[in-house]
Image (cartoon, rainbow, N blue to C red; front, side, top):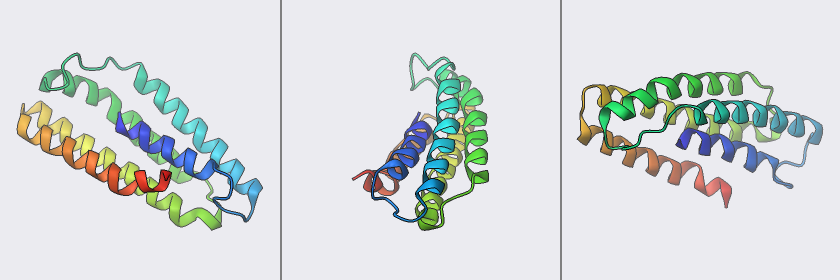
Length: 140
């Protein structure tokens, strides 16, 4: 799920040497805590059966009904972590991208429940574009 990719990006970007330069202990603490939050969410989402046919609205709805609450909890926990001041703007941007992914997943769940394949495809496209614009540049 792309939510996991965004969370991994958060940890990778902040864990890279030279990303801050200020209070390294604070940065390390945040990265370690964020890594735990993301790893736990990734594990929980990996236990949710993936749709055999991701274009099947019923299978997608079954997956999202279980995955979205995990992602929401992940985001909530990340927001509660104390952020190093030097990277607060970057962290806020990545968390906003995670929130956008949850929002898209919730809209996709609604579309899947109503069997609106066109809306599902549109949301997938928008979500991929969002990741490309907001997260990919941070990994370069």
